[in-house]
Length: 435
Image (cartoon, rainbow, N blue to C red; front, side, top):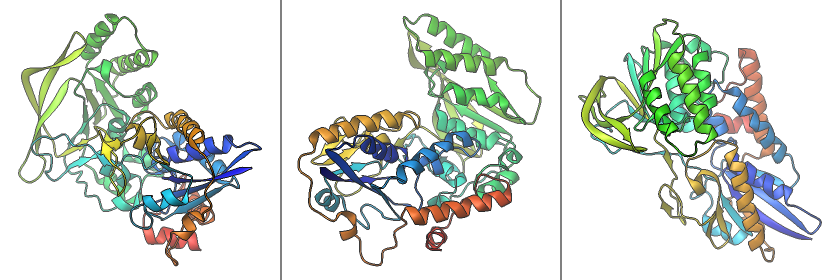
């Protein structure tokens, strides 16, 4: 029986689905010992620190991750950082294959004047702030203005806008960060505008996210019916229309025609608007947009501009992968060919393909890369893996320690009537794992 040692760096969905693909590929002749390495003291990646707190159903995928972690060939090494506690070159020597599932966590920039003003933020800082990520507890967010602008036309932009526009009492029964909930309850924001550069037919939202919007109890949602009519015309001119696009436009049409409740909180989705400049004296005060139009399926700019007075701008226009010693980044992701980086190093998930797709997309992606790895495996290495690389005394959060943290958060949640109360302090997380 051949047993190969596999290191997976990153304990998010892509990492777990990679572990699962290896587990499923085992046979009488072939087995794998899987070590999953994670920088944070907690696993699950964006399922824990990215999925919006009012979307608890999506987080149930963590049950699948826990099942994968229970297999005898799986070990978790959390609180271990690549490029600080261990290095890629050492992992490469110690393992038969190293899979980078390190995601993409750096927010892309608009590249416009005024982007660095106070209260111009990236969703890459704002989302982990309200989701209890220990690195983002101190993110400064000023919610004292009445209008917030969210730039982007994908599900992240939608999450950000919804969290700003929702009546915070609707977040009480969720696992939203306590520090964020306090701030949101004091927020003066009553109008949130999502601005997308392209038309409704190009938006990257998914239909289930759109269909959820009219369900907000204390917020009216607006889309200009004219923009939807235009988009429907453009779609009718297409030779082939994807089902997802049809569903999206249908959901947007429903929102545009949906009867309004006449409540003070408003969320508007505005298309064909490109941000040109953020203005303000040291702090965001106004944003200038250019109006666009669609001709022959292409978005073209016009000479018309408009401005919106605002005190908060959040950009959600995608993410780039973070560089660390031994890898190169191009177009915001780890340089790779079909997941192969170099030698016995591979990439999966957002690190491989950029920030596209939903959680489930990582499953087929990981399966493909694991097939490629297995094809390339030759003779197993004789080595001790990560245990020989870590300095003695380095505190690792293993699966048992993580289960203690998890149980503690869930118990605190039961007392508070929430799914869990997440611990946000790094040292406290480690001490919970130790208890």
